[in-house]
Structures are given as C-alpha cells and as structure tokens.
Image (cartoon, rainbow, N blue to C red; front, side, top):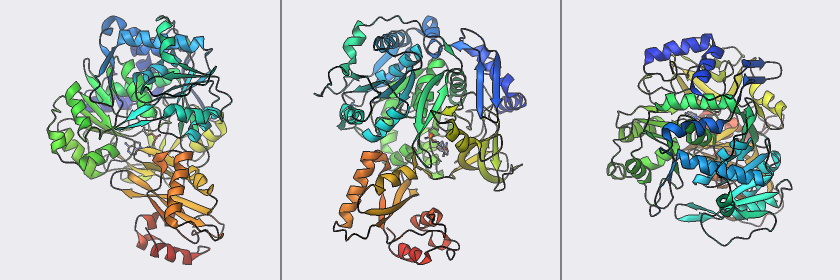
Length: 635
Ligand code: WT7
C-alpha cells in the first residue's frame, strides 16, 4: 500500500514525479499491491500510436466482482456495502452487507445465465436508482456480459438507438420509478423503444412502484420470482484484462451518441486508486455520491471504485428537493456521511434556499466534499465550501469525462490546497498538456489552451463501440500522440489547472452533456421548421441552458409561435429526453451564415449571452443584416 494513499503535498509531488518518469511502473505497482488477479500480466501497457490502440495489463486474468465483493467477505462480510436511501422518507433505508450483495449478485448472474446471456453479450440496463441497478451491473460483470446502462431519464427513441447500436439481447428495467412526488412509467418507455429493436429477446422487470403494466408473453418476465429460485452461488467468469466491461453512451458534437467502451483491468485499477485518494476513504467511512448510475460518475464512484475499496456507498433514489430542499443535508445527518460528492447544478439550486434548510441538520460527520460534471462558479464554490464543508472539509473539484473513466485532475484532500474554480493538479499517472492554436504545446505557467493528455492511463476508453475510426478521429487526430479532451483550460502561475469549458459543440446543461446536432435534428423534423441552431447561454442554476434560433418554412404557417414552442419542446422530449428542452426560443427569418453556408454559432452564442458588443467582424457574413434583426428580437 506504499504509494496508494497520499497524505501530504510533499508526498503528492514525490509520487507524481515518479509516476511521470515511469507511468507503467507506477501503475504496475498499484495493480500488484491492491487487487486480486487470477493470473498476472505479460505487459503493463502497449500503445500502437498509428492505430490508437492501447492495452493495460494485457495477459492478466481477473473478475472485477471478485475484487469488488468476494475478497471483502472475510474481513467485511457484515459491513454495509450498499446503503439504499429511498425516494420517500416514509420508506426505511436498506443496508445491504457485502455478504448479502454477494448473494444477490450471484442470484442475478444466475438468472441472466439461465436466460441465455453469455460472456461478451450486451445487456441494456434501464432502471431507477434502486439496489437492483448496482446489482445488475455487477451480475453482468460476474458472467462477463457487457453492460450498457441507459439513464432512466432518456426517452424511448434515445433508448432504442442505444439498444440497437450495441445490439443488446436482454433489457433489465422496472415497472416504473419514483421521482419526488411523481412516478414515471419506465416499462411503457421500454415497450415503445422495443417496437424498434429486433435484437432484444428478453425483458426482465423489477417491481418497484407496483402499477399494473402489460407484460408481453414470451418476452417479459418479473425478475423477483426468478431471483428467489436462483442459486446464491455463481463462480465468476474469468476475464482477460482487455475484455470489455461496459459500454456507456455519451453525446458527441455531431452525429449519434458514442458508445464508449471500457475494459476490465485498467478501469478497475484506475477507478479504485482515484476513489481512495480523491476521497481519502478510510475504514468505516460512509461515502455518498449523488449522481445517477446512468452516468459514468455513478459507474466509477458509486459502484466500482467504492466497492473495490470495500467501502460503504450510498445509493439515493430521490431528488434533492423532495420532500423539501433539505433532503441532501438530512441524509448526510441521518447516515453520518463522511464524503459527499455532487454536481454544481445541485449546489446552485440549493444555495437559493434559506440557510435554515442546511443549518437545522448536523453535518459534522463530513470530512471531504466534492464537485463534478461542469465548472463550478466562484459563488457556488464558496457557498458549498462555507456552508456544507464549513471551511474544514476540503472541497475537491474533480475534472474528468465519460471517456477518461476516472478522475484526472483534482485536489487530494489534506494535501493539495483548494482554490475556488480550480481543479488544481493532475492525479499521479496523468499528464495534462495545454495546446496552442498552432498545435504547439504551451510550456510553462500562466497559459491557456486546449486540454490534452499525453500518455495513456489505465481507465481510458479503448474505442467507440463498432466505430474505431470515429474514436481515432474524435480523440487522436487533433494533436499528435495525444488524447484531446474537447475542453479548454488554463494553468495559473503555480501550475494549477482551471477548466474553462468545452471548445466544441457540446453544451453542458445541469451537468449533462448535450450535443447540439442531435437536438437540431430533432427540431428540424417539425414540418414547419426550415432550420435551427442551438447554442448555450449562462444560466443561474443549470450552468448553461439551451437557446434555440429557429427559422420557419415559408408555407404560410398558421400555428402561433407559442404553440410551435410547445411542439418543439415536445419533439425534443420524445427524441432525446426532457433534459434537452430549450429554455429560450427565438424565431428568426434566417440564421447568420458564412459565405460557404456554415451557421455562425459563435455570433449566436454571443447574442444569447447578451454580449452584443463582442460580435467581432460580421461584414464577411453572407447575410450580415440578419444579425441586427436577431439582436432586435432577442429573447
Ligand atoms: C465534460 C465531461 C466527469 C463525469 C461526469 C461528466 C465537464 C466535468 C468538470 C469539472 C469543469 C467539468 C467537461 C468534460 N466537466 N467535470 N470538475 N470542471 N468541467 O462526464 O458527461 O462525459 O462530461 O464535463 O467539459 O469534458 P461527461
């Protein structure tokens, strides 16, 4: 455990320098000392730069669930592994021990096997934040099936396209979900999706909200009776280090969502190591990440990272505002949470409420608080640091991505000083580079550029499912032998990093990654609409919100603008999900374009932000007069 747990800044610099001098040796030591391997590796890392192919620990054999569950049974069998906090405060919390988790994962793994799921098959999981969700991931991993979790807020169209892209043969879902005072008919969404998915043979349904739902004979089955009958013993399937563990979809700036493929050994080592250091997890701590397991944050820092460390990890089913805006703080007090990890958008929303909602709860158990998903603005940082961290629990602003699999840049609590809005320093083994406009690396401090990563790290996504070419083009073509993140960043006078935001057409709304192209495609399906352009604009709570510029066809449209706005947001909800709805819609005769016909989004972004005096030179546009009329009618 020598270099596994960093305790002060000096030690960080020592470990970091060592890790950069010899990254493979650094990761090899961590892998050797902290995990259970059925067979050791032949090579720590290989990197075929021409093909953008990376491997870690090739030749090794393991099963990640043995590392996340079995090996803790002797010392921690009766410790809570998953602490489930339901949506309703009337329903008791559930403490699932490592022993119970072992039994339940094995039972579900046996059910999947009995339904014909084999190593390498894809299983789609579309579930709310209930224990069965984590158990389903682990059950897939137990038998070597590749899980593809789709966030249960996505629409049936979005679900269908993800199921088809990775050719899933089985879907695990529930009759519905609770969300605050509402219920959502998840099974209905699955049924609709599956009318367009020929690949799916079986649907297993968890009972959660006890509604009457149609079950399609031969295809759909309630899972509980099958689990009750299933054996609690299931030998783990021995996996190769580079066997895929899961696929998780993320938006790109263009085209359909990208199925990022994460493999077994490297992902395990990297997610576990970062969990331990970034949250300074100690025995008997109670760790809580409020993300949904439908996102990478939940995969790495609710399920795999915490369990690989034998931690107690909370799963929360509900929302921060139900039954009132003190729910987060109430849960921290109730379970004596020691590490709390959430998103800036939640902080900004809760900071608007009275401080009494915070102060009536005892938050003294907290040791570390974290932020993830988007830049945290200075005001939200201070509110969180002062009122939740009470100035004593370090606030870790963690930068990473679906593609990176694990946290890349973050303070290490009690070692790295924290500064508002700075993700601060790269974790050991991670080598950021800032690139200038001429593809040159910006050396030294006080520079700002595009953020790249120089050397492969174990948890990087290995490819895009069925589309390695797109992987290569998106991440490895902009700069030679470097991974391009799509983010901009600056390095201050002492070498600390601050992420400045996306430099492509991805907009982060309430911490959710949204590509503009799929939203525009959905809108353009409307018969009255000629063209649309979506940009982000600053929003108090969401960080960024969506502004749509829309031009109508000249067909004597009789519908009112108000009705059209409703229809546009309905289309978006159906095609993508409610998270992609537009906050502002402006109808315009035309969109500003370059002479080659490209929409000038840069100008539209400035207008949406109200920065009319910063449009730059517009005289070279094809239709500069349009800009004036757009400014005049800005929403
Ligand atoms: C994008 C990745 C990281 C898991 C959840 C989101 C933005 C993420 C931060 C941060 C500033 C951040 C970046 C990144 N982002 N964390 N701490 N500070 N920006 O994963 O959906 O793949 O989104 O989120 O723009 O590229 P994701």
